[in-house]
Image (tube, rainbow, N blue to C red; front, side):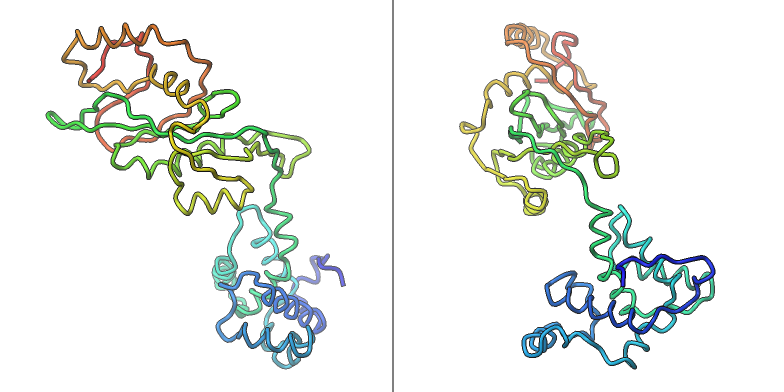
Length: 324
């Protein structure tokens, strides 16, 4: 039987055949045996016992007694199957538990019988191949690496009348073009928490429309990411799943670090408090004017600041305000 069910409007309330119920449940057990969605397995399904049974008699051990199959799939019709398929095989990537909760609410609104969780779980695992086709993306790998670095400008941002904090900047830079892909600004003591935000902004900024790509979107992702410090575990896990190799190097080993830092120094945080030492500002501006002119930098909108100060990123030449 085909893995997909072509149904007509007049057959929506028709139950599936016992053969189809058995196929769906046996397929779910086989994929559970292979380690798929183990956290979503119903409580009464003993995975270890299933593995021992399959080791003794093969995948025939995944077959369930017809009376149990009929009890599990009670109230499951073609319409139920179609609804689960629409909820689970979408680009939203809903979990099995979320699909079950949504189905429960839909059945309550329509005063229809609520399927068992095991039936929903089995149908979701049966539709796993179709789901992966729905949520898959088209990726184009670049040959160069991205670099994640931290900058600490010699400026202060006013929080209150007599309270300041030292800001830090996390930058994501393309080593080939020397363009800033994303950045975040936060107090120096909480700067490590901004690394996931900078990585997320850089990744989503690489989406490009493409007529032949899945969902019409092509992702341009690097092969490597070079960092000065080890990434948080969550970031490393995401990069590994996306096929991106993460390399940790010191500041001296980071590619082009000195040139990028010179470029970044041309941009500073300007506080609304202004500058109290105009002589120091003049000397700083004079020194910055002699730095090599940077290449074009692509900047994203900075994250909201954890203070009431109004801050902006601007060139030193255009504004002499600077709190040193």
